Length: 388
Length: 142
Image (cartoon, rainbow over all chains, first blue to last red):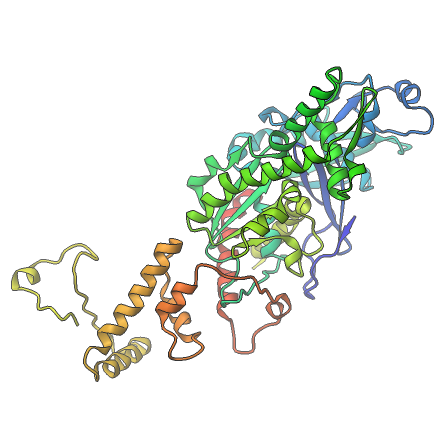
């Protein structure tokens, strides 16, 4: 997928060695600016330990599962792994240990290689973490990524389609709070220039108290900014690990599936995530059907009920309290909004709630790419400000 | 400027900032901004009570906005609110009452075009928030 950045005539300040990452609990992606265009690659946050023989016999010659060799092990990834019946699926969600861990590094390497970044490249990585965990995990992330497999800083990965292994080195790792990218995506262009946003009353739309409400798979993060200043006393309470779609949408659906098919013990929230993504991309009844242990279930009613419950929960527990405290505007970020945006807009017609499609310079950015793309804009803006 | 006479006892010691029920402003005639403000003050005072009513109206409107949004307008914002009024009959209080709920009518193409008259309020606000944001983020990029 390519996203066209805003053109101002200013020279771009970032080069293609900057890689912005967003390895969430449900989806993991990287973003890179190449010749003025943003390129991205993403996969579900799940992998399965596989062998080549298992892939051939389990699925037949017609079905290809993407896999990569990493640290002496072959891992399947992507939506194809849900069809593997005997491979344990690693999710490793919502744990502090996952930051800088083997899976975290694996997914970023797979995505970087999938973007066809040249082997041997020395890269600068931008890695987000939940705001409340930033101080706790920053050092472990930087040390892990820059360590390399054998302490020499070099990581090796070989995709199914690669003739030779690829090697990458992370010469610099920048750790930022999740949500920082989303604000930056609205405030700056990809050239690092400021984008004023005039409202009907003559004020800049990002002035005053602005909250980024980042609804992801594992967590919902609330990031408060007042005239560009981050409120430090609110950072500790910014991450809610019960506000993501795993807890509010996927687990209830998984319970419904297991109630209908008790023997489907291999089913996980990651399988449900694949179903939800398919449905939300094209919400027709046939896309809500899933075959589990020989039974076909149509879950459209449960999905729609779950979306409504989630919207009501976010409204009551996040949005209402924020506006009651005098928040001027709210920025949507994260894939969780894809399930509730229409309902929230209908319930808050007079409130300033921003989505990327409302502005020319963010129109081509999807909600789940906002943080990742915005982190590149943030890096460009920081570099531009340091040049002055 | 207060209508009430302060007692000799009250004049002896200055209390903490904001503790008094009256305000006294000494204008600096050598400062161009304060000289213009003094001129306006005298103009308003030509009609009995008008200067006091104007100051009360402005402060009361700021109070309404503060109650609703938690914000205290800066002097620049107050000046811009007055200068941005469409007709002289619309009071600052009415504008503050309408302020909390704004509709989005963003015009990104106009935002991208530089203003001939210099920086607009939107540009100044955008630059302020951007500068503050980058100041907070810069240490993460070191």
